[in-house]
Amino acid sequence: MKILKKKDMIIREQVIHVKTEKKVMEMLDHPFILKLKYAFQNQHKLYLLSNFCPGGELFFHLSRVQKFNESSVKFYAAQMVLALEYLHSNNIIYREYLILI
Image 1 (cartoon, one colour):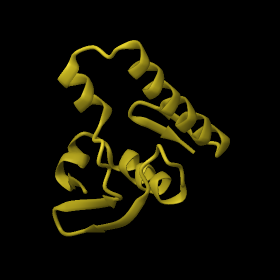
Image 2 (cartoon, one colour; image 1 turned 90 degrees about the vertical axis):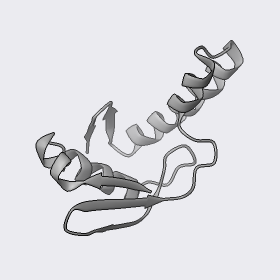
Image 3 (cartoon, one colour; image 1 turned 30 degrees about the vertical axis):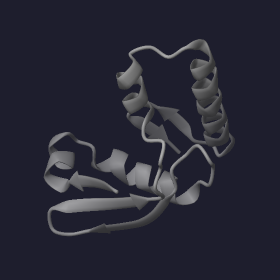
């Protein structure tokens, strides 16, 4: 579950970005892209609920080993390429912190 404080989204001017992220997560279905199952909110927070991802985030794994070996790099790079290819085939351009539909 991703929990976002509405006040922080407004301060950081991320409201449109978060709405786009929610829309993309709802409409796509790919094994390397999280799918949004539910979204709800209260007065102060927005909650985005996706499937449990047992492997965790790539950044977590990288922070543990500091540097991936060649086979790990190939594995993760292939997954990212396939995910980006899927996004592009759905007319979605992904850049870090920017999603254009």
